[in-house]
Length: 98
Image 1: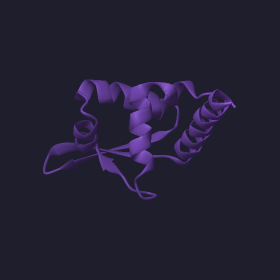
Image 2: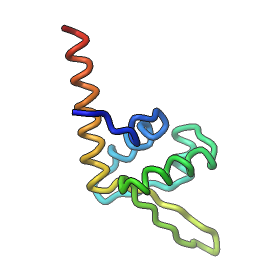
Image 3: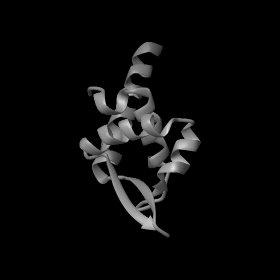
């Protein structure tokens, strides 16, 4: 099993770990995720774009009272990729323990 280069980056791993804890079909507000992970909006946006391009995150934008609101959710492919990456990390830990 190989590591997932998209998810392996620490900030993207944090994003995915947070999204994976949501109920199925649930979304999180971009601003709430930004605050939770203590990231700048630009930093979070850059990493979300990479996750979205990989098909791991779905981004939904809407306007509420004329203000833009961005929602993020993990996709089925994202759940599978995250689980495989975690399995890869667990395999590393098993090998290192002997």
